[in-house]
Every structure is written in structure tokens, then in C-alpha cells.
Length: 415
Length: 184
Image (tube, rainbow over all chains, first blue to last red; front, side, top):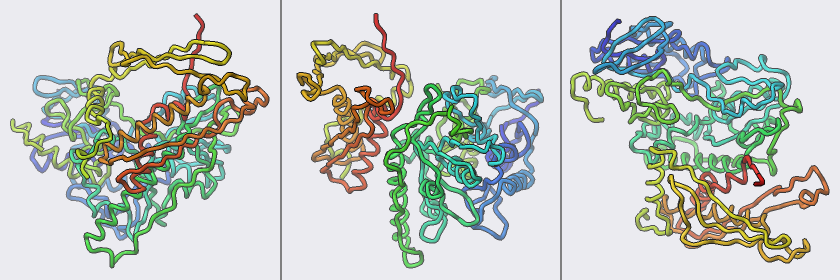
């Protein structure tokens, strides 16, 4: 068994940022990676995807975007290059092609079993990513065999789909982006819409991320928000990173002929059933968007920005037809493919330590897991609203590596 | 106005406490609501609500509640109670309204008056079997609130939206449910 002080699981942006923070604190460690650096980005993302955040926001501890287009959005290839560049920059001790099979407590440390041998360590940082395992609802098993099903980690481009109608389930960033490009490829698209977050790409002359960054929205801490459980469940906003900086919301989709139905609620005798709650989930998103813009406007006034930026504006409510369909017969041929854009649910079943809740997710307090010396990194709203974004992981990695160093020294500092 | 000065008669602390407790012991959240429905005569029935199961044990309402249901005279019935379909609207309206009060309390909004009209559109060709393409149930339900409260219009809309998001009956009405009817 090889031994090391700390093991970081996952060599995505989060694991690498942690590697950098540990190195700065002279903590010897290894980063175990199932595939290659930036594995999910290399293999499990669709072709047209670009980051939802502008280039200027691509920053990791000690590292940042160095190109000439700060307001553009990185393609998947550019993200891979960025993360690989970071791995080189921090000289991260990455062991690629190493899949972790089990983590067990062992004395005052842990044993990490991998397909490439066993590691012993005092501390573990789980940075395996919140967006690596697609979550598909159980109802998928009852979909008639005549309908093809695909998740977003297997989807690459419209050309891989049948020519017929497509039902996209989910209306977060992924769902709306795929609905848009699939519909534009000549296939009739219907989107099943549950709760979602609506945002304009550009507001008052600046990217919405600029406003949220400047107004402090992205820095809100997990211990400051009213209801962190709910905040961690909020789906990713309806944004697309495009050179044209377009806003891609439900109105944009219905504008090109995409149909909207309610949340995918069930399946009976081959009939897909949709919730009658479409109007309300759209109202919730419209109201939430308005509250965010109110907050931004208030901040802009307080910051004295009003003379320098265009006037405040409000966007039309989401248009919902009078009687959206409540069902589609999946045996009729109208729908040939279902794209499940229903989010991600990481699999932690290899974590053989009693830290999982009844839904199999890691119990933690701002990334400090309820097992001594164990940490979680890179998941939604871990410590801050920005936690799951590339630029958001740095502050979390810094906080948690401080705690980890204190733990090793026998005096974990309060956070 | 702070939350402590607002009194809509909802014990929000107790509800939040229950939510926290159920996060730790999710099995205690398994409830069974029960109604006993007895046929009286014709389309008239009388239903009784008394006990239910929840928090791991049998529970009792403070007293027995009864509900008469019948059909109106235009259906050649005696009209000895609201129609069952209307009782669904009663359930929807009262569930959403309870939610409005609870959400308002949580958000520190004092309610002065709340009134909802619930309008369900139904084509009875369905239940009469005249046209197989017409469903038996409601084709559309509209709930319209009049709310007098110390709140902006946007805050009132948010109250109503959040109430729908957390309503049991709204969920029952908008989503499919497996129903098993057996004869002993």
C-alpha cells in the first residue's frame, strides 16, 4: 500500500484547484483520476457546448484566462485546454486511468482502493464532480421500445438522432440548449418543463454574470441563505454561451416553434403524461427573474452606476398556450427520441464511510464531511452560490484546504 | 415589517421544525389520509373523516367531520350535498389558501383578507358517455385570488405561486396518480 497525506479524487477543475491549495500548504498528496484530466469535458459533453460563464470569469487559484476575447465563451475544446493548462501550471501529481473503487476508514485515516492499487492517507477530498452521472427518472424504464432514449452525457449532436419528433425532458441550461439545436436541425421538438431558472444573457449592457459577480450574488455563502437545502436543488439557469450573446429562454424556444408541455409526470399505457403545472413553474421563474433584476438595479443605483449603463428593463412574461397538451402517445410515432436532460446525481456508492444520506448524497457542512479529514468539493452551492462554477471553486478549495491543514495539525480552525 | 409582528395564525416554526425532523427520519413522513364513504340513497352519499396515520402512529382529528355529496336537480337528483367534483374544487381552493397563509407568515406578510374563486370547466358529454373523446374530469380549472395584504402585487403573485408549488391537492389535480379500487 502506497501512503500519502491527502488523496484528492478527481482531476477536474475542482480537484486541481485543491491540489494547488494543498501544494501551497506543503501537504503531500495525489490526485486520482478515472480517465484523463478533464475527463467529463473530453468525453461526456455535447459538441456545441460552451461555458455558461464568459472567459474573464474562467479563473482558478493562480491562473486565469489569458486570451483576447474576455466576453466570449469557451468551447468544450477550449475548456479542456484550459484545465489541462492548469494541471501543468500547478504540476498536479495526477494518477490518470485510476478508478477509485472504495474508500474506507482506517485508524485515523483512510484506505483508498483503486483498480491500480491501494492508497493509505490521512485526508480525502472528494472532487469527483457533481455533473458526471446523468440522472434519469425511473419512469424511463416504461418508455416503449420504439422510442429511442438518450442522456445528455451520450448526446453529441442532432445528427445522431432519428429524423422524427424529439421530446426533451428538462428545461435547465442543458435542456433548452439541446431543444434549440435539435429543433433547428429540422426535428419537431417538445420540451417538458419543470421548475427552472430564467435569466437574460445580457442586462443593461453587461453579461448577467458580470452583474451577479459585481453585486455579490455569486459570493453568497451557504450559511447565509435562508434555506440551503432548497438553494442546492435550484437547477442551472437557462443560459447559453454563444458568440452572439443571445438569451435562450422559453419564449425564444416557442418563438422558433418548439412546443412546451408540463413536467414529465408519468407514463400510462404508452402515454407520456405531463403535469398541469406548466403555467405555475413559468410564473415562478418569471417572478424569480424579476426579483434578481430588482436586486441588481438596486445595487447599480447604490453603486452609482445608473448614469453609465442603459436603463433598467423588464422582460415579457413566459408565454404559455391556453391548454398545453397533458399527454403524448409515445406509440403513435410522433416522438421518436426522448432526450433526458434531467440533471445529474453523482454516484457515491464507493464511499464506504457512513456519510451518505438516504438519497445517497454526501452529508456535509460547507464541504466539511461528517467524517474526520474528509471533504467534498465542486458541487452546487457547496459553500457559495458560485461553488459549482469553474471560477467558484477557488475560494472553497482555499477554505477547505485551510481546514484540512488544521485537521492534520490537530487544530481544525472554525470556518 | 418583521416576521415576528405578523400573525396570520400559522405556526411556521412548528412547520419548519417538522421539516427538519423529517429530514432526519424520513419514514415518519409517511401519512395515510382516510375517508369512509357511505351510500345513503340515489346519488347521495355521506363521507366521514376521523382518523389518519402519520408520524409513525394512528392519529385522530379533534372531532368527526362529515361531508354530504349528491348531484343537483338538473341531473334529476335531490341535491342533498355538493357534487363530488365540486368537493375537489373545495379541496383545491382550501389547500392553496392554507398555503398562501403559511407562505405569507414565513415571509412576514400580514394578510387582511384572502378570497379565492375556483372555477372548473367540464364537458359532461364525458361522464354521460356521449363522446368518447371527451374526458370525464375537468378540462380546465381557474383559481382567482383577491388578496388584501401588506404586500406588493409581485409579492402577492409570489405567495400564490409558492403555494401551488407546495400544495398536495394542486399536485393531485395536476399530476397523474395510481388509483386502485378493490371490492372485499
